[in-house]
Image (cartoon, rainbow, N blue to C red; front, top):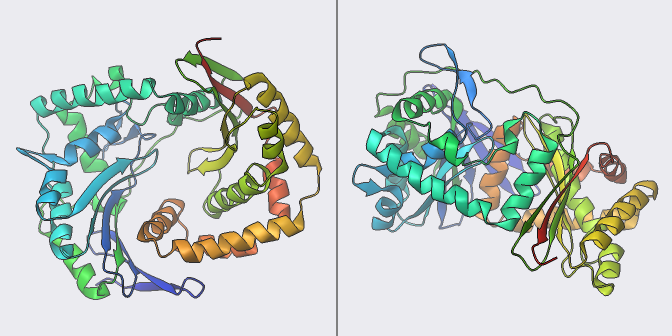
Length: 430
């Protein structure tokens, strides 16, 4: 019998319930009294950076083609003679799926067909249907998707940043893989990856809404247990290439048929762990607002000189195998912006952090957490972040409250010339 743990946060006036079922599946329910909409998400801790692992059935270490996690996402939402989106639409429910570097999620949103939606979502994920014919068909579809990405300047400048930073880590490879890599995917490999990473011990189910806790857990458990492929309850063993601390390339420049050049400064960091990942993301948001938003002196100066029309945006991304800072912008004067931003970063690293501004932005962000919590999407993102970082739900609220201006100083000093790369998509008409 499973035990239900309750995590309550007074600032958000919210409670999330968590349990691990006897079949190995972790279930999280974020209770939202009074809300009509309900969201259900069935996910696995399997994303694009994982392609080297121990087959959970044969116990042998294997390597699979890049893009197979994303390929699986596509195939699980397609059944013989049917498509998951159409099946959900027939009952008036919105649904979709996505794959990231470290996880894959399938979800629905509904107001009235909650129980039916849970059963359908479980059915779609627990009944894989892979054939030689539908794999070949999907290779063509995803191949087109990959080529479309190659024509997208925002996509190119982002992945070129990753390619410049990383030498071995698979984060540098498109989540969808390459046209060549997906050509090596077959139904046998799909079943191997499915059996390994879609075993319930590696999966999670998240519900957000005004639902009864115990009956919802029973519904999920009964729905999953109605399928025979639930017997494996083991941790997955994966392998990551040992990534050198040095960057791969200092600069990557490509030209495309665009109006405004795009530039990313990126900083390759040491791999962060658990709470540190959450903290870095929170500090990055504060740093972005303090130094690079439209209220910053830097943006106003660059705007008045005709260098920028929109403010740069700084973000942090991290997982158990990678960690980096991205600072992206579109600019009218590429070389002038590059010179100015590098000088500006060095200057703010030496200056004292404005405590009044820091406190104002921090308090605003705390207030935003309360406001954003009315959005059910924010609730499930918090839960998934806690699952992936192996931290308690609401750890982000605690960390945010404890931040000081010294954390901003530490973060700024992560940005050094040694770990910096530049990725540019320039205009062709120069």
